[in-house]
Image (cartoon, rainbow, N blue to C red; front, side):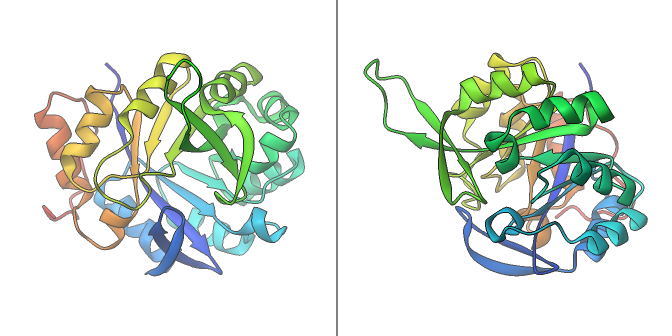
Length: 265
C-alpha cells in the first residue's frame, strides 16, 4: 500500500486564512505564508491553498500570496480558486504551484480539465468537488449534489457522475469536500468518500469534518481515501499533524514520518 497523505488546507479570503462551518461563519486563522511554513516543518505531506471567494467575486487568484507561499515551501503545493483558463493554470504553475485546482470553471466548461491535462500533465490537475446530500431519488439511494462558487450555487450535477466524468477528462486527483460535514469536526462523510473512491481510479482526497485523529483513520480504512485533509484542527492547534500520523500508523496505515517540529497535540 502506498503511503497515505496528510494534507493541510489553507482557505484564503482577502489574503488571510479563514475557516468556518459549512462554508459560512468564517473566522480568521492567520497568515497563509506563516501557516504553510509551519505545516511544512511539522510534517504535512502537502499544502492546499484555496482562494475561496475568487470565483464568487469574479476575480483572479491573489498571485502574490501564492508566490510567497510557494517560495516558503519544500512540499507539494496545490492552488485553486478563480482559475478559469489554461493561461490561469499556467500562471499559477509558474508562480510556484505544483498542482492547480479547478471547480467552478470546470463545471462551467469541462474541457478546461482536458486542456490542462494535455498541456501540463494530469498529475498537475486537481478537480475540487464540493458535494451536499440531496433528497433520495425514487430508488431511495443516497445522492450528493455538486455546488460551485464556494458552495453558493447548485450545479445540477450528481457527485458520482461528475467524479467519473472529470476522471475521464484527465483529472489526476479529486479533492472531495462534504459541505454537510465541513467544519463540524465530527467525522468525514464516509458514505460520500467511499462512493467516489469506488467510482474512480484516480486518487481521492477526503475533506470536510475531521475533528480527532480517529476520523482520519476511518477515512482511509473505511472509505479508502488516498489522502486526508483538514484545516481547523491544525490551524487552531487542536491536534498536530504528528498526532494524526501517529494514529494512522498505529492503525497499520503507511504514512511518511512527521517532522521534528511537531508536538503531540
